Image (cartoon, rainbow, N blue to C red):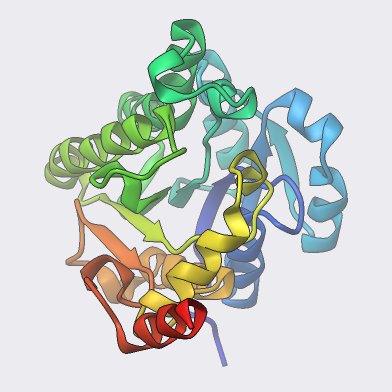
Length: 272
């Protein structure tokens, strides 16, 4: 039986190792019949397990700094040559904050780091989409998905300048989605994922406590990395042709919950 991505060609940004959400998405895309290339910066490829992962997936690695337009242009050209046609889907799983890595609190942000956070984590999506438009790299009805987080619109202690980056990222999803939809029926969406064990999460202190909190508060519990990959594949497929410019909360209901019985029971038990 053919997978729902059979015959589709894609680019997956952000595969670092087997803890990356992009890794889970790449595996699911392969299972569903897609052909794709994976990409990261040259430095990240050398430091991480990207080449080993590419061998396991049977795909090509193309180095690209998503903040540099010439790199993006080269990626799009080489990807189309490798895959044999225009691109049908893109996963933008790109984020980085030096302020968080260096444990700088939000009121003490380094502005050079802050600008880099916005450029890497949000503006990179704009650069990718703008370059795709100018080079006509995406097929009619293609799908672009990026990964965001609920802190884009809520206060979350410790998330720092990354919250601002995610808010900007979601704005780019709406604006570019509206424009690209009219031009080529291209869909642009964001997934706001539950807190998940990834390489990037190591920047945050006491992350295990937050995982437990989110798991208890969400009526369905935290959505897993596999759940995220499944949703990405659905958005890449032809089953979601009418869905664009949205931020989809893949979080077990956490974003819509004020208080749950599971959390109250746990809180009461700890008080006792």
